[in-house]
Image (cartoon, rainbow, N blue to C red; front, side, top):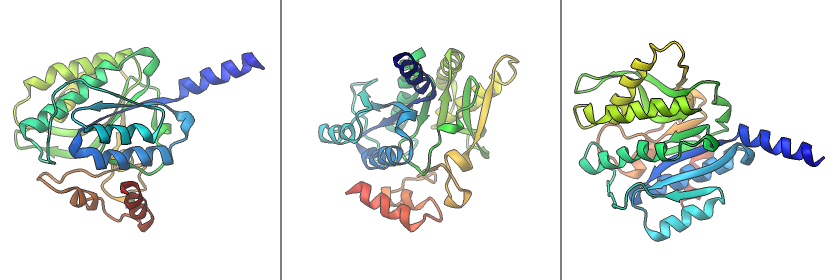
Length: 260
């Protein structure tokens, strides 16, 4: 029985995922919604741990987030407090975004795989761990967009999975590409360019997950995750919550409850 239990525990650990996100003071309310909906709607056995990269939380905010689950770990990749005030494409916003890949690289260890990187301005509707596929990385496919600097964006970096050491190699190439991108927004264009490069490698497996499922802006797509994404200009917290269309009243009530 003991050997069977050890085997079962080992298998459960292998099936569970590390969840990783980045939070600062301005995104605290988003983080509460994200973490509480994650805990409520994901089986506990499927979460290995939840890692938060703290880029400027207040002490009391840090305590609140830690109290949500014993599986939450908080660390810093910078001692600098980086306020963003929900303003996008500013220098501080770029600094915060830059910490995402730095922190992800830091936790790339064999015992942590698979690692799912999610933006904290998301709501977990239902268990998404069955989206994990046999691959090196998984990326979020979005409707094609050409930005102001001419970059073709077929993917968005709000959902990204590293499944193994080959996935770590992709991340390192992505990080090397970021400083070479022109314009205010560098993370996603660099991701897209890196994906296009790795697609030509026959031994590299990239799975594309539809944004309608893992980062939807509309509840009518039957999503597992919705994304309170900014619509390209500076919006308040409540405006960004309303950006997701057709939100059921039951979900609105839960969000209100989470924020109390």
